[in-house]
Image (cartoon, rainbow, N blue to C red):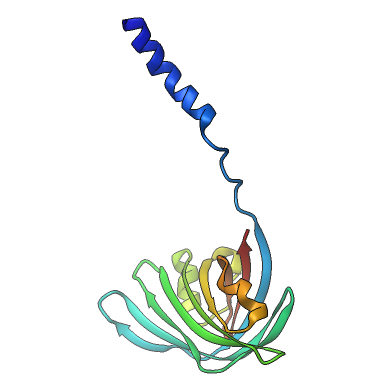
Length: 175
């Protein structure tokens, strides 16, 4: 009886594994589009309890990619909380307008961090090497355009670069 229980204990995980469905393949990323947003001078609110509040107005810009292009409408902004260790929490909202006049609302949450000397330059509005900065976002898109519904029905990630008067974000669809 002891050998039977021992055999069952050893063989059961193997038998169960043989019956389990195959794992889904690792996700792939497919380039979707790039935005180039012109941004204003940050409004500094100081320490608001959770960190240093900054709001950066989006003045306009362009976007282009697979099957679409257009402009970024003025009026959006990036509401940031910058922590003492240099981590920035990003909450960016803006509107894209395709060349065909279709509107896309974007709510783009993310994080940005870098070594302290790089963060100091970024927050001072200086140029830094984008490869030194971790700048990732997770956008959500809303649109009523029938031909752009793939934006609302998929997951995307963004990889950003901050320049003194421009932010570049490349969006990748998770397949």
